[in-house]
Length: 68
Image (cartoon, rainbow, N blue to C red; front, side, top):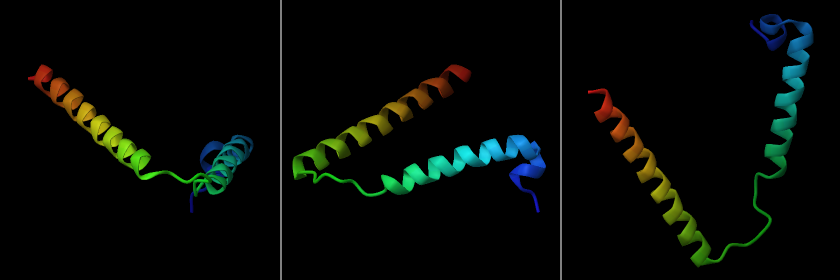
């Protein structure tokens, strides 16, 4: 079975493992939000997510049409 240590070497594997463990620890700490959001804030965030998705799709479409 492949582990980070066998792929990258023992010393580099320990460094990479330390980084990923630290990131995992931070993700667990901030998994749930500590503040309450009002309905207006939730709607605004949903609007921003949809807007960002549309911008990414538009950028992808523009890229695709330039390749043709």
